[in-house]
Amino acid sequence: MKYCAFWLAFLFMGSCKNSQEKLPYYDTPDFTPKWEMSNAKTFHQIRPFKLINQNNQSFTEKDMEGKICVADFFFTTCPGICPKMTKNMADIQKEFIQDEDILLLSHSVTPERDSVPVLKQYAEEKKVHFNRWKLLTGNKDEI
Image 1: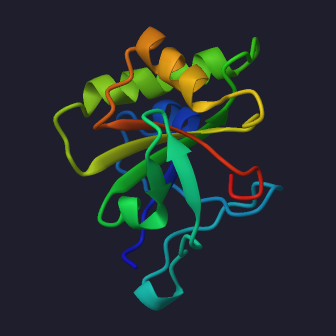
Image 2: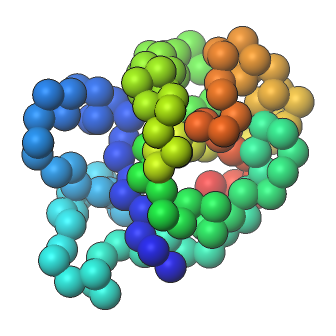
């Protein structure tokens, strides 16, 4: 599988707006940064998964192939950091709306509440463009 670079939206907007620096990726809960390695065989790989998007369509790691992915984790009823992160994702969407290589992914951390209809309504309220930004839910173990 071709690799997909994951950038946390708040890091992207905060640290790289006018920078040529490469960002690390994070694959552990303690947020230990890992940097791109020169050997593609040792670069971070996304494990197989299956989630559902706001249009009730299956979404897997294969849907990310060849894309630069910007990912965040949220829940639709979050009163804290989520609205700011969603605004940052909306800003990224606006900036890259014509770039087919960019894919935004927002993973719900409360899939028991964030059903497909809830995500669909949230997407409409936040003006999420489906071709550029997927809101994802599914089995909590997959998220």
